[in-house]
Image (cartoon, rainbow, N blue to C red):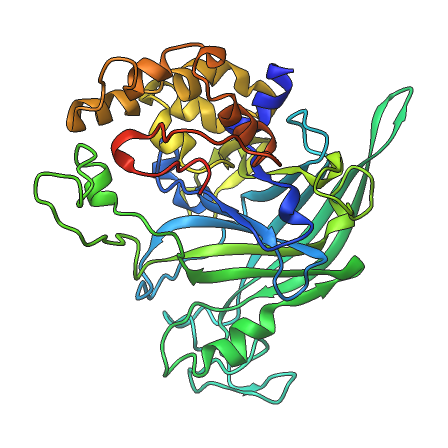
Length: 416
């Protein structure tokens, strides 16, 4: 049973039983965390969020973010999704670390006017909605001055019946030619951005699904400067600075957002009525895939690509690869699927490096209570079997009570 549950623990972002009855969110973060993907930002997963939709509580909202640390004022070459990358969101509803439902997003880029350096200067004339072209203002998603435009298609795949030839897969194209809103260039080029452009890029798809893909403010909060400066967390470090700092504030990313009816994601095809229902727990992760071959051209045209897709980035549980994987396995981790994550149990769950650093900095490794002393013991002797349940199955229905085992941190962060 350990193997089956652990597959979700390392990768899949667990949406627990309260998914059905109340608002809860789970999130992750992974900005430029591995050597190879740090050189490939357009395929880099940064965050993953999943929660019961507050506006439609019979649905789940899933947000997969890509392209870390985008500077909003990044013209003239504003950030876009990569047409050579397949962006995917996966749902495991049986606890085996294998996707039962998936959503694939593929993007295309078109340029209306190649004779300008501006992303917001198209060709003169009226657009299909009557908007005027040639004045370097993008007022609508159909404006002729929306010069560099991305569109995308969404394909949903779900497991069907087991046949003599294997598991059948049903794939449905939910939508095509959906428009990615332009970058928020500024009040001159993209006036009334949220009302006229961003909100108009939310689409209704068959089955009650909603979708959006485009640039958004990066919502994650982390003090990267302090975390990676010897874990000198400002309130606890030598300088005693009580103020948290959001290093990512002011940066953007590209978000892929889905709102999906709960019954489309569960193993039973129904909305669970009780938190105790096994179908009330699902695992979610996202990835990015590239073709195995890319050939650069001498004429300056786009590279030629060929071959099957290979996974180059993935994200589920928060900060797993970023904080717990050693350098030697980070790129491998990004290429691994959840069903194979048991191989990382020792370095990422049983005895990761970071507790030793915390003990070194803050002197918490006292006999019988230090972080390292506990981490190096087998799970059954830590008296914290609930931590495994939290990782594997979400927050237990009846969590145990007892002392705080997180020493100087001051709170059980696995329960918060």
